[in-house]
Image 1 (cartoon, rainbow, N blue to C red):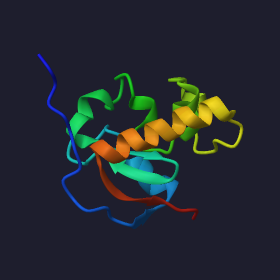
Image 2: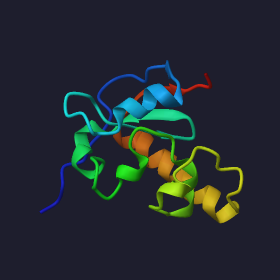
Image 3: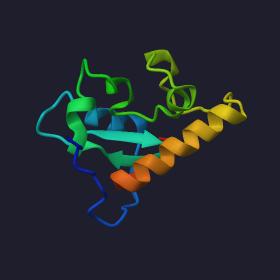
Image 4: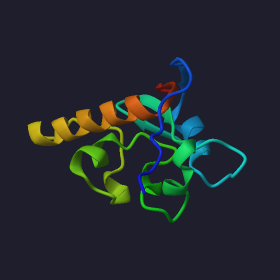
Length: 115
């Protein structure tokens, strides 16, 4: 059986979140949405929250910008950081593919800003 496709249902928002504010949306509080940032753009991944809650496969990315880890195809928490400047060309392509994937599937709720 094919899974239903998740697509964005709302226009993109441009709300600003600091990394500390974003960290509150890590899936540990069932009353809050789950957010993942890719290249500074924050996506509401709540429609697939079961994949991002603590202890689940992609929980390492919940509540943060884990762009480097996405580009490296790594689920290691130490790789799930926003600085992707060390990625090589192949890894940057992987990261760009993830960014496109998220844009096609999830609502954009904001962007990560420095304090």
